Image 1 (tube, rainbow, N blue to C red):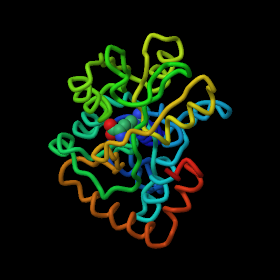
Image 2 (cartoon, helix red, strand yellow):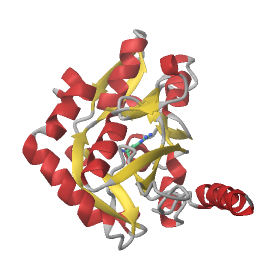
Image 3 (tube, rainbow, N blue to C red):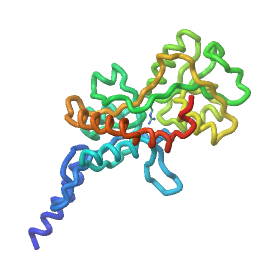
Image 4 (cartoon, rainbow, N blue to C red):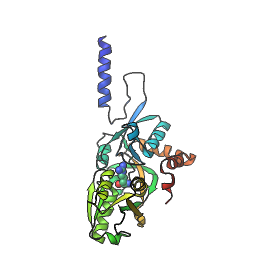
Length: 260
Ligand code: ARG
């Protein structure tokens, strides 16, 4: 009896303490290995909360993480946080990996390791119908929103010097879109596949894809530095590329948004 109670207590504390480590969960028998995936669920169709079903986080990245993990014998648990905190979360071990449509920049590579790229997109300038914007020149004197900690924030700051506009950052993509809709921002820079979804739900929004080639934003999976999981996930990713499984997932979640 005492022993049973102890193992229950131990089991619970293991679950709590086990957060962020690739630990064996459960107090006995069940030795499924679990990985905590950090993401920022404000980014449909990469990751978002399926409001129809409650609080569940779904999307391309979630499907991809599950498929990859399954190939190498892990389970994924998704944890939602702010995009700007994700790198620190991997680095500090609060999460085991990050899939968040995240681009493997040189700066981030100083803190984490990345797998190969699994998807490539471009950026869009999104604005309210009627705003006279058709190229970056037209942004002069305007206010342009970006997500805090994103590569869009970096490139906006560079472009702002060249074209003379003000950059404002927000934590979550829907906040950005809201600021454009209510007129506080004149425009926002958002990845094209994500922007398209918001534009479909709000016919007042228009946008154009930016022609700056170097802004091509690939997504890759982040792991703590020197994690042995990076190579394992790369292998599984290659397998999915070769078998067509990755293409299937891309079609499922991006459909014709994928044709640029
Ligand atoms: N690809 C961009 C970056 O790496 C933006 C990603 C934003 N992701 C998100 N889940 N909100 O900075």
